[in-house]
Image (cartoon, rainbow, N blue to C red):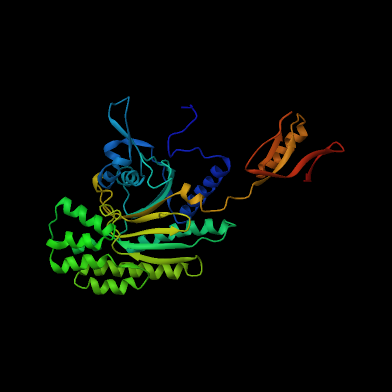
Length: 395
């Protein structure tokens, strides 16, 4: 095999796309800063038990592992950044009150998460620690949509349509409260609900109390647009915790409509039987879908127990997205305008070039005997010597 061939689902990012990803990264981080989020940069590798602690255990199969030549301990390359953020909040910052943190960097997966996906996503995320109210959930969704809105405004492509899908992790546990299930039964139940396999679910629920079994089976059909919530109130009328979850979803839905109606091309949907992250999320969870992707562009929600394994369990809510997914949906920016300059020792030319660069202009010097090839730049001006004076001419 040729030495330059990369592993499957790993790829170089070439100049034009690399600049586009970098511009999205800056847009996201700048947007987060306007909301008051502080940037952190966790390490790429940690002791394995730290990366896989608590909610991170589901990442075991996705985590590359290696032996530390200094300590002999097993290290892991991060497959997700949230466990690291929880560790930083619990042990390094250890603040009282609300902490807002954001990050952006690569993560590594042992296997692609979906067909044709990269195993090296560029993950941007934001998280709020220390507030249990729905206001924090709203702010997180608000920041996520703000980032999408900013990128959409900057794109010359036809505007993207977004669907925000809402769910709640408390609904299914409330229907199973007081019922003892084996791990096998629990796995089969989640599998049937996830695939909306009603016939299989009837078999799994055969030994459950009739009222609970009926509610679980009815839950599978509770997905769609806003009419789902009134139906859910009827199905879940005997479970106060589940009704509280529906009230929370209704509260969030109303405020998202107020904020984004007429601003973004969005629709709001619900899937009350979505069990993704069942063992991870503890409250409202959301996904953002758009055309051109077979999976969600953004996933997030509330995960209040994420810091417990680090000795500090407190409210937490956040989201993440892959910039490499997102960049495929937005028209690439037009090449940046540049000034063409000859190579010369003339101090007057060097001074003019330096002044132009100080003002933010891109000046490309033509090396002797060489033409420049590029993807990112387009010459619209050039520096020429006229009457013993260097002047800028339009091309």
